[in-house]
Image (cartoon, rainbow, N blue to C red; front, side, top):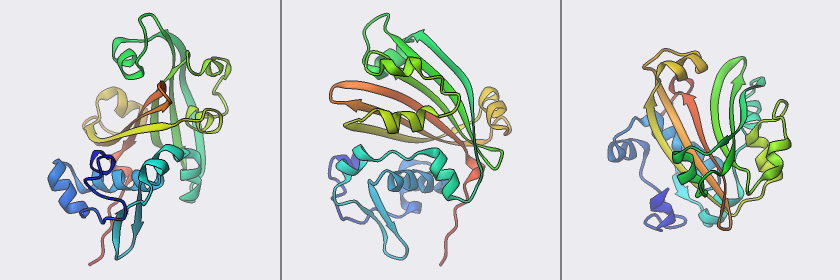
Length: 218
């Protein structure tokens, strides 16, 4: 993402293939494949068979205006969607969250943890913090029927977004939540959004690595 924002890869330019990117960043091709797909869903890059993946002609604008709604993503795959709320609490922001959201001391945040299912199989674990100074109405939403992902996309406009992609290994807590084995591979997306100078939310989205298959044709 930094190479796109800095124009190291210019709009319209074809970026390196997945194998080369995996070697450059020291991760698996599966992780690269998922990261590129996320960027495509956000409108930052354009993927075309045979011709490769290009940087969108207006990547900054596309990244700001498009965040995928996980419910629609799952339904588009032809799967049945289900959502489960695990936690919804107002807390004093921990130091790490305070830094991510650029908050003053003793600021209160909304902490939401939830799970998205595809055909009754855990698809994505969402661990989100919402800045209540910027989005006070979030405190009045139960999030029992709608996920914070979808609610924020529909209710809270944003001007900037930041994405980070990584591969991790599941600890016992995450393994239990996602119904996988401790030590299994995970794909992780961390995202922050802003409205002008105010941070709206910081979220960590965790996917079971085995949920994604990398298919290539010679």
